[in-house]
Amino acid sequence: MNNLKYKLILPSLVGVSIIASYDWMRVVSKSVFLKYFSADLFPLAFGLMIFVLFFSLLAYDKILSKLGPHITYQVMNAFWIIVFLIHYFLLKSEIKFAAFTLTLLRPIYVMMLLEQVWAYFNTINNTESAKKLSGIMMAIVSVATILSGTILKNYVKQIGTENAIWISTIALIPGAMIMFKLLKSVNIEKKKKELPLGLAQLKKMPTLYSLFFIIILSQIFTGVTEYKLDTLVEATIIDTDERSVFYADLFRNINAGALIFQLFILPLIFSKIFLGHIHIAIPLIHFAFSIFIYFKPELTFVSISFLIFKAIDYSIFRGAKELIYVPLSTEIKYRTKQFIDVFGYRFGSGAFAIIFAILNYIKDEENKLALASLAQTIWQFAYDYSALMSTGLWLYLSFIISRQLRKNQETYQ
Image (cartoon, rainbow, N blue to C red; front, side, top):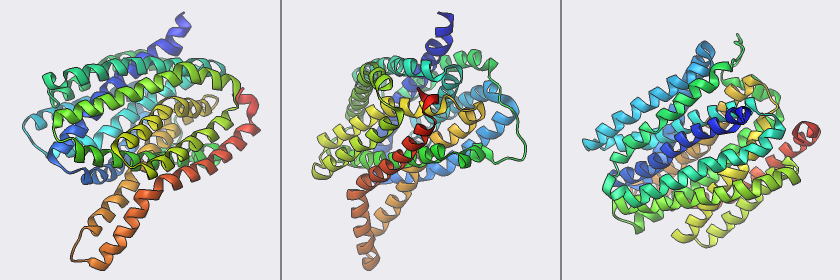
């Protein structure tokens, strides 16, 4: 039981702390953003995010080298708590720029904290135990977030959208207390004269750099889908609190779908299906849904597509991705993994968002008719087909990963 406590129960509780915080922060940040800005500015916020993210990861890498995983987590957690409490007071004072920076920072903090938890999970578990416990860990987190999403949906009008920010911030504290205990025994060898962010290890392994580009492509898909969703929400739901209710309900359903996959699908497929084949099946599913929303670009259908993608992302894709890291070194788990999973996830959505924002701006400039016409054509092509193209390339890279995993199949049995 004590072994299970450290392999599953305690890291799951940290995940609950982080994701419960993020679920509320995600809902309220979208709502307050749309209170002050148009949905057309979402791509600009996500585009600027990648620059902030890169320097955040460099800071993480430096702190990790000097202080190790144990203290690094506490420093990062305390930093984000302070940042979001400042945003709470700014938004209560109706400083609208805080709505923009909150949207910009929100995707960064959850990834930086959560990937450290998974690094710990992958360190303390072997491949066999990770196959059995990863789905349970995600399920525990999903149950908690379904409950938190239900609470937010039912009480957001009484709580107030801005007030939910400080509640989601305080939710990070219990997780930090648990991680202080868990990471005491984890150490990373200090290496000199090597590329930062674990890039030296990334260059050497086809599986890892293929995974990096897969994550970028997956976020192009989700970025396009989410942008379509946000645009439709802005057009059809006017009231800020009503938007909060819609988003809370959507993300609660996403977590419910993920829970079903985590409890019933993951144990079955991890025990019966080769890991490489799982990686191939995931983009095939998303390719089908990208065709679906191409022909049905309506709020209901885009919401369904976004829900399915996120449910798979939080369950099957997360589990299949983490199993790749389990047999690898601690250096890769705490350093290279941060670059692949945190930077890869956010760069995919952020870089594409920059292109979207530029094209969106140019196509609306009436005094640049020729350029605007070209931008309109490119923008419409990207809007319609980028989801299809990204999942097609994702499928190709999945075959590379499958081939590499087949060479080392005994490691992943």
